[in-house]
Amino acid sequence: MKTLVMKATRPMMAIAIALLGWSASTAHAATPADEHGPYIKNLMSATYRAPIRPAGPREFTKMDIKKLTPRAESRQDHLKIARFWEAEANQLDFQASGYEKAAAEFRQDPAPKNLGAPNSAARWEFIATAYRDEARSDRARAASHEGLANETAGL
Image (cartoon, rainbow, N blue to C red; front, side, top):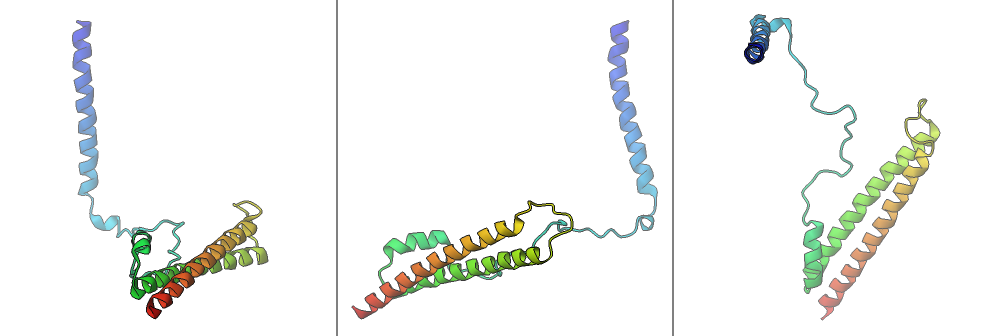
């Protein structure tokens, strides 16, 4: 008898919970929608930051350039590669200037409640210098490919 009661109470409990949920959902659905008002949905996070890179179509990706570099024979190929590396250097300079600006603002007027480390400005300057170094390297690559383009034009 005890097992029969135990077997019967489990499905009864599940049915009771289902009925309670159904009645609560229908009661809410019966209220007019005007009481709730229109919801404004914020689809962006509060910590959303706009992309640093200016949006626009790119002629090549890094993978395309890696494939094109060993096979580049004509002047146009070398100029395409040079344009790509120059654009990459410009983008890195743009990012570096953003970090330098943020570091200068933080040094001038530190946040009243420092949520980051006390050396945030130094860290941002370090990142900016790394971007500047990489931009310098990309400009050197661009210059070497421009030189190769001039050599192939002279042939």
